[in-house]
Length: 345
Image (cartoon, rainbow, N blue to C red; front, side, top):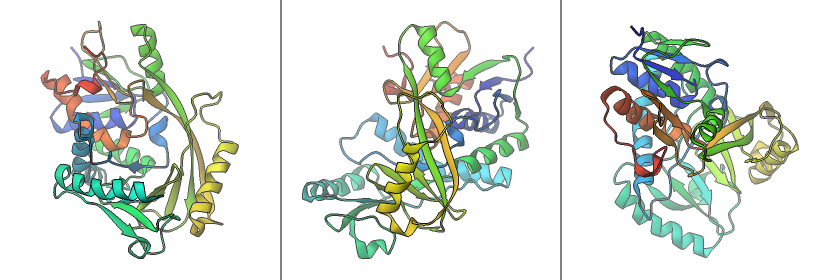
């Protein structure tokens, strides 16, 4: 007889979040990861949780909206159980507008935010005066400011999840056999395994490099400008990133590409010039071919399931992914959006 209801392979945010929700529902859980929690891309530094644009609405955008609206209660429950800060905050985001066309589109999306986000958050066009002294250059002097975007400190969030799971009686270990039902949340290497098992390309890894700077901008909105994320964390650091590298030889090394990111970030935000580099980080993020997370039964493996492909939105959608996977695994209730299915019909 199995000693646990669910074995979760992979202690990244998808695996840990699902373990936490399963425990809340009364299931017994063991998380197995030979490298330890947060050893993959979930151990990064950036932690930018951002919505899709509020227009041309679809199921994928609704899923992400639901997840972002679930996030405050989800991370509060984790933090309360663990006693450890997750670094979560609904801090909002600023994006510079480069030209009149972009301004017109941004203003139109304000109406979309009212329609699709309701009273949950806003999407406004603001000027530099409204942004204080924390803003990148803008050719128009205008910015998008949305209040749905949030931040989280990935390393802290993983540590908080681990402590919460153990406080709830869950087991986290580096080696154990499959018992009960098995969820595979094994990141980019798991995508490679799926490619082989299914004899098709469902996804691969994309390397990212990022840095953590010592600069106190607590309470300021995150910045997205010039393709860079600039995230002021609640511990008095600022994360900047990241690269997207399809070809790489060393998954965890940093190099000139990160130097270039740091230089670009400090040019955009002169206030960061001279800030001490606290950490240089590199890791490989699991990117599904469809660019949407891959969820569902593992074909031809009874009681085996997959949750993978978080790529850049893993922390943002994790609360909703965890609920969906627990519905499927514990209650055989399938509410996976069609765009997220491991194998499309």
